[in-house]
Length: 286
Image (cartoon, rainbow, N blue to C red; front, side, top):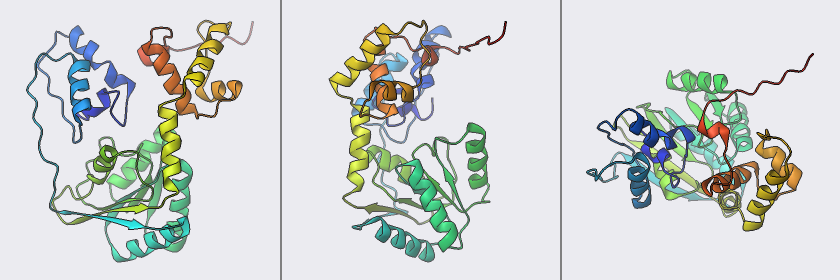
């Protein structure tokens, strides 16, 4: 199992299919299993063992120091200062690279800036794009047709491009674990590479919003629960955005998804999309 941190509810890039791997192992007779990941805290390691239902496995933890990576942090007071610093950095650093930003809008804004103000070929990648387009953009970057990809943390799973010369974090990531996972995509060929983090105080507000969405307040969970209990449909087909709007919640759609996960964990809700592949068919004629 590669990218095994995704199995854990404490992992920074949780994927529902990974959470079903423990059940899958049981169904096929619990074969010998090795779980691999570049980043796993003690909590994540214990959770992976529990979720995969491994029986007293041997655990190997290696160091994470890589001598070819040069880590830098630059402080800037404004977005405009960071943008200029990014342009200066790209003028001084050739080769391909990844620029991480915290929101979809920021990715597109940085892409447009580089297209207008630099001579580098650049694309933007985020979770709001259709899956076919995301796959195509990933191939464009992996094949070298584009030097730079500006991306949210949706970009990175399975990325093993050896000649990434720099990784820039335009905004601070959500955790040190996430930072190491993303910065570690630089210099996999062993050649010198740069990991640059821009810091400004205002970036904290974005991450605090994400943290609030990941840990919704009790009253928001209660509102979602009461609303779904009173809903006449069975099964209920509602997007997280629709739930947010209908209830007037201050948390984002991701926060509504967290409410649903907590209710599912309490065995009062079953989310069909995360359990099995189902199709909904609505006949709209006689």
